[in-house]
Amino acid sequence: MTDLTLAERLATHPRSVIVNVWAPWCAPCRRMAPIVERLAGEYDGHIDVWKVNADEQPDEVRRLRVLGIPTMVAFRGGQEVTRKVGARSEADLCLLFETALSGQAPAHRGIALSDRVLRLAAGTALVLLGLTSGPSLLLLTVGGVVLFTAIADRCPVWQAVRVRLEAWVKRRGSASLEV
Image (cartoon, rainbow, N blue to C red):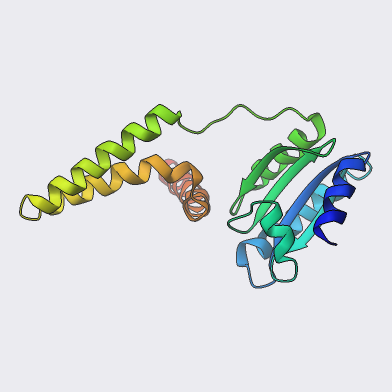
């Protein structure tokens, strides 16, 4: 599939499409594959799933502006509706399929641009203060955490870790309730 072919296919395809950008060496891609295949079967006839191997089709990856894998991009009527980057839970993938089917982008759950800029400025100020005040490990740590909160919602590594952390906390919480 070439750039032109993918763009043409998306523009003229009668159904919604989810483009699954993956690689054979990507462990999260392999872990999500059975869920994606099952959902593709459930939505058969309504949504098509097209796989793009990032190693074999780098031009497609660039055209789609994919910066990390796995990435799932939902299209309806040739237009991008939403995308999910990083390892995703089954619930997140179900939401992606429902979004592709409806064509309605989900409400943005990230932080506002003004909050992002404020956090970046505050974190940078704390880090600089920590470096110039002798260095202060406390200020450097707090500054780093504040900086991270400005980008955490866009970090695919954090999204993958967050899912595992949430599952671990749920397991620990239910275990402590049983005792």
